[in-house]
Image: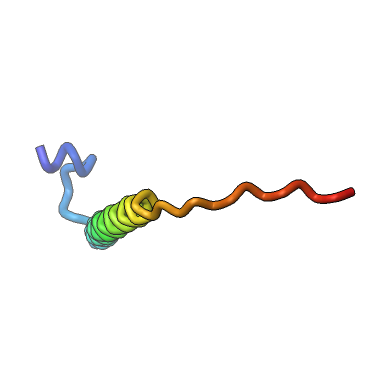
Length: 70
């Protein structure tokens, strides 16, 4: 089956193996980046929710602005 996936019956082409290793490394790099970005997003969402709860807890009676005289 591995030979069928490679597309030929001969031995392994070093260029093909190098490309496959490069692509596998790229996939690992992208997966790591995805995990990092998801963690950062979770932290930002938690901070935003915390800020919203702080803003909701502040009960300041702000007077309405007077209309400008024309």
